[in-house]
Image (cartoon, rainbow, N blue to C red; front, side, top):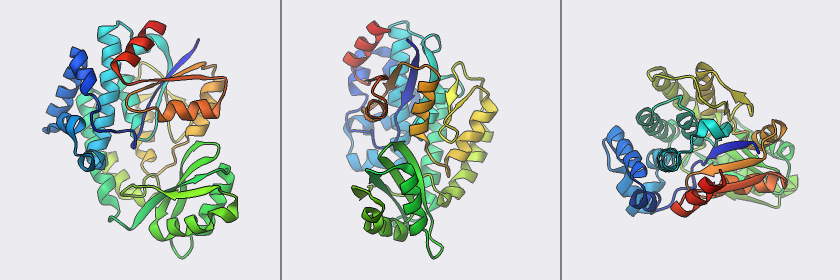
Length: 314
């Protein structure tokens, strides 16, 4: 068996996340406290109690999802004696999840990762005024067809790009709202079953995020990065990197670049990965892996019971 550990992105957050872990495991509680201290904010209270509108804000959702993922990692390591570096052939994460993966691989400290994600959330929110940009999921067609749709919608100076290549038949467009609205109208002509606008506040992973990339280049430049203990599959490359400087550069590119998740799963398969384990909130990535490759096993661990089951299988 060859394992890859993956970390969820935005959209997997839910009110109540992390509470059960903190109630059951001392090391999880310590992670949430460390993140609170790093951010000078009671983020854990928002995770546990909401309101949902506050948790969903990019500036809160990003560090919250990372904190939940890292709580699972620490519980596995401290309560069950399972070190990720001994078990994982690779780590990878979807969008902000790449920061969780970098933290789990020892590239950044937990406190630095929390602060980087707070900065990232703020920068992404500020990059484009609310309402100017958006995103839409295109379902039921190939990546090439979605690229052709994006090109058809990027008229009159509008930006429209394929931002998340999640799986065959599930690609997300990002860009100016005018272009996104046009994509929803035109999608059937390109063979799409559906094209649904997403409830996001900004056009993530598009060239419109360039101001945020500049901010992240500066923020990442001030943080100590260490050599990863586990090779990290970068979103923008869909291949593994084991040099910390390259990981940092890829995180800067990732702000405006595409999340190549479908290719990431293919890469894992080519490298002989048999089992993918999603650590953190929700089951989005394990679901995508199962849909993308019937032979690969995929499980998720975010609750106390799921962690115990995973630990006994590892």
